[in-house]
Amino acid sequence: MESVRQPVTWAVLDRLGERQLPVAAPLVSVLGRWFFTRHRHWGAGPVAAVTGSVVLFALVDRLRPDLDRLLADTTATAVGLVVAMAVFTVGSRVRRRA
Image 1 (cartoon, rainbow, N blue to C red):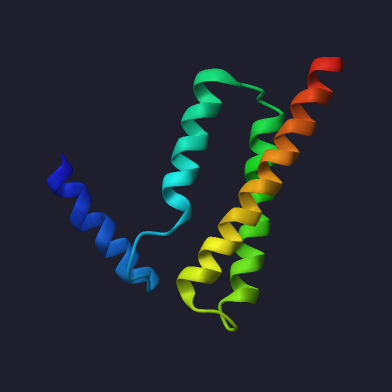
Image 2: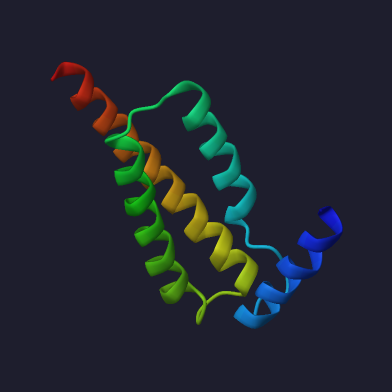
C-alpha cells in the first residue's frame, strides 16, 4: 500500500504547485492523534481546527509574497497552531463548566 501512496502524494503536491510536503502536515498529525487519544472535546476540537486553519491560510497568503516559501509556511503554521491550541483550551474549559 505504501508504494501506491507515495506516487499519489507527490502527484497531488505537484498539482498544487508544491515541491515538498507542507510544514503543517506532521504537526497536524501529532495534534490529531493527541486529540483522539486523550482529549475528545467534540465541541472544542472542530472549532479549534477550523479557526487554526483559517489563520494559517490567511497568513500564508499574506506572508508568501514577502518571505521565502519555507519561512512563510513555518511562521503561518506556528501562529495557526498557537491560535488553535488557545481556542481548544478555552473551548474545553467552557464545556467542562457547563
